[in-house]
Image (cartoon, rainbow, N blue to C red; front, side, top):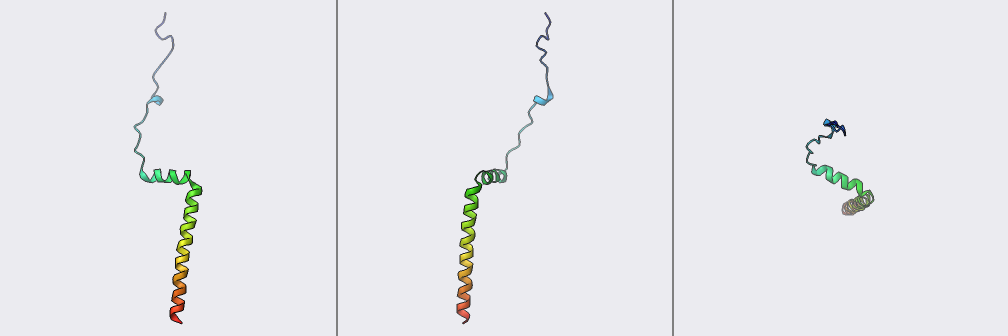
Length: 66
């Protein structure tokens, strides 16, 4: 009986490269992409809050100049 019955060999494609450590920015980006609806809702609320503060500030400036 032959030694190479199964014809199993070594392939360089099976060699795993050392994995790089995942950076914190890619982890945050993955979480944002996974929770798009929640992130967009929070951004809209934050933008509305900032716009409201800016409009109040502008209105108070108008009242103070009169």
